[in-house]
Image 1 (spheres, rainbow, N blue to C red):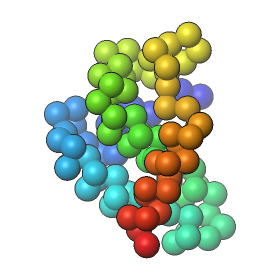
Image 2 (image 1 turned 180 degrees about the vertical axis):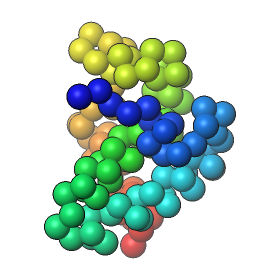
Image 3 (image 1 turned 45 degrees about the vertical axis):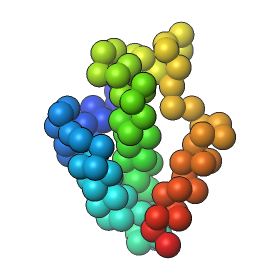
Image 4 (image 1 turned 90 degrees about the vertical axis):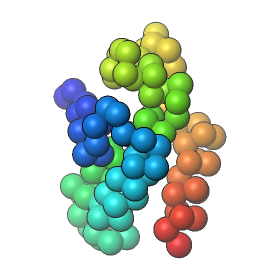
Length: 100
């Protein structure tokens, strides 16, 4: 299954500013948040997709790599990707701090 374009996921254009990107992300994250949609697997999948897109596009280096190579920039052997290490944990804690 191929991934959707990150800009399409967030409903923004490639010329989006950081502040516009953040607004679009927060709006979609609130709509698809698992706490607002208990038991809805589709909402959970969309929430994860929105988070992945924002994590990539909000980081200048990752966004540049994505703009140049698309999803291939983060596949095996690529320029490195938005992994699920400590960065992801820090990112998710920031999201939940902003919500609550």
